[in-house]
Image (cartoon, rainbow, N blue to C red; front, side):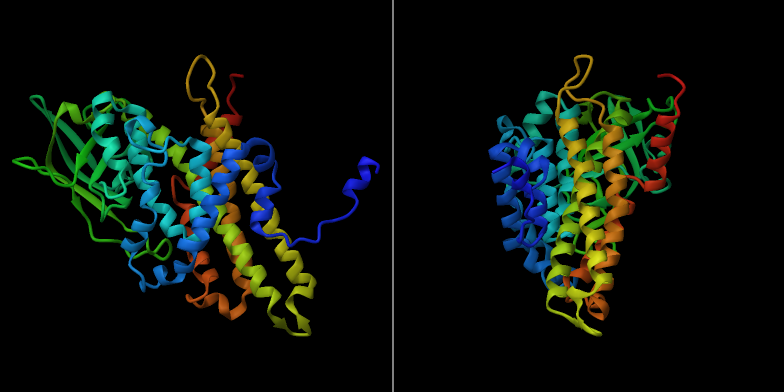
Amino acid sequence: MHPLNMHSTASKERLTSRRLMQESTWFRDRFGKDRQDLFVDLMDFSKKRIAPHLTALHRGEKPYSDMLKVIAEYRGFTVPEDFGGMGMKIVDSVMMREALAYGSPSVAVFFEGHELCQLCIMLGGNEVQMARYLPELAKEDGPIGCYALSDVNCGSDVANMTSMKFSMNGGIFMLDGEKNFITNGPIANLAVVFAVDPTGQRYRNITAFLVPSKIEGERNGFEHGKPMIKTGWVASPTSSVSFSDVKVLAEDVVGEVGQGFALAVTGLNYGRLKVAAGALGLMERALDETVAFVLGRMGVGGPLRERDVVISQIDEVVEAIEATRHALYDAAFYAEGPGGNGTKVPDFSIKATIAKNIADVNVERVAAICSRLHGGAGMDTEMPIAVLSADSRMYAAAEGPRTLLGMQLGKAALREQL
């Protein structure tokens, strides 16, 4: 048979989200057997253990604490094996977030706070801090971490934070202020919190600290705010965290004093990859739910699956998923690879921003298309698409809005120096 004839017959298999992934270049040529098996295992886990509870979680009919027990085995997913974790890398973590978000975006969001807390310790912490905190954070029944960055007054605009301050009193740091929109805020036991010294030099006046929610003896920890009632990611506990004359020792500084800005920005880059992965998982679930609905639905004049307007909209969804996947895994593999100039990690901020922005645009468009194709059923929160539609809007603000990130990309393209 001539090689060209091997491509002349189109597959008769239905184009599901899993088939799209498994036929991608990333899965076939870049994952390797171990990662292919891991992705299948993660997706099967999500479909069986999480996906059936999507609507019940959103409606408050199933407690979120039950799902924390279900996903507890992944708490140490990216923690090095030497510290009790699974030692997974960036691409693995992206795969995990994509798969879990397929089941429930709210459940996947748990790792935005928990993994970023672990990440800051791995990136900036010393050996003592890593040995003290990482094994505990990796345990299935261990403490829950959060990443206390978002400022009350300026969100994730790190350089201009004002609502969380620190000062020094002898050899003791004093923390006062509040952080807002903190994932895991109501349930966290440990926070990596970023605070500013108002008297310091811009960009060098921010420091990261490790602070428990409770400290024995005379010292106090941070306080949990009232859980927010959100329109999306409803089952993900979110709140402010506040600090009032919280004493922190030098041993609780992550990295060095004044290095908090670089640590926060690096954390946001990793976070943007995970946000894009969550959006991809949501889109894949939306495609599968919508195809199943359309195949069984009659419309005016005949079955919906035979209507050109429906077929063209399903095409838009498939294309959006594939575009997002390419941007996401291009960024993830680049971030995981060796950096230039002898560095361990390359500067992947541009690629992470592109992936996040593409995912942000596509997830809202896909959710809107799929919701419309469900008709009135798309408004019923007992239907998965209604929950996915509400969740889709949350990605616009997570880890920086599209407009701000787009400005950074435009400025990078217009720099005078080559």
